Amino acid sequence: MALIKCKECGHKISKKAASCPNCGATSKKKRSNLGCGGLLVVLAILYFGYSNIQGAKDATAQKQLQASQQSKFNKNKNQLLEQMNQFIEDGEYLKAIKAAGAYNTIKDPDLVTLRNKAKELDLVAKVAKIPTAQTKENFDIYEKLIALAPDNEKYKEKHTFYNKKMNRIRSIEKQFSAFDGSHYQFEKYIKSKMKNPDSYEHVKTVYWDKGDHILVQTTYRGTNSFNAVVTETEQKNYLVD
Image 1 (cartoon, helix red, strand yellow):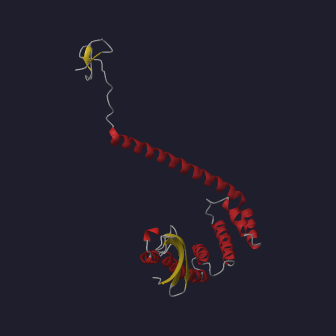
Image 2 (image 1 turned 120 degrees about the vertical axis):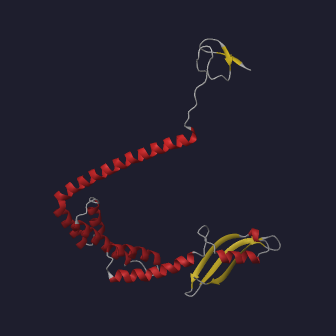
């Protein structure tokens, strides 16, 4: 048994002894009883404590901002609304929106009405310049217009029209890989015909919507019967669910 000297009294004791039998001095530090589980609990308590403190600070800052904006708005309301009306009449919708942006926490009905009107007219001006064929861009704008004016029949009609087209686009896009744009079924078909499927390398895939189906064209590389790398382009029709 290995012996060591007690640091306090010099008496020889076992190296494994927790304390000196002669003077009682502790030879080893006590290990923490927390363990991994206890440490995680402590960290969780600290995290939630910090989150609560930060949340309280954010709430206080938000109240202070709202109070500041409300005070400024009360002083400048008439002038602000008159300015926004003038911007709207002049077709400068973004300037009206920007002017209202300085009071983004204020829910004054007159301010909200003018801000929404400026946003609506700005979107109408934008969508007028977008070709009908650009489905996603049109759909995104009519989504916003519907949110601003849910009872507008024209917006609802246009939204329904583009939503149907978007549903078709979504159905088509499911057939293609988001990673490299390849068509899942067509790629399997091409590999099934190749002499060496493992050599397949996708280059580019495009498609044309033909109404009742899509025409898919894929360009790819691979080795032929002579082990030479060749580039091929093939086309195939696929139905849309």
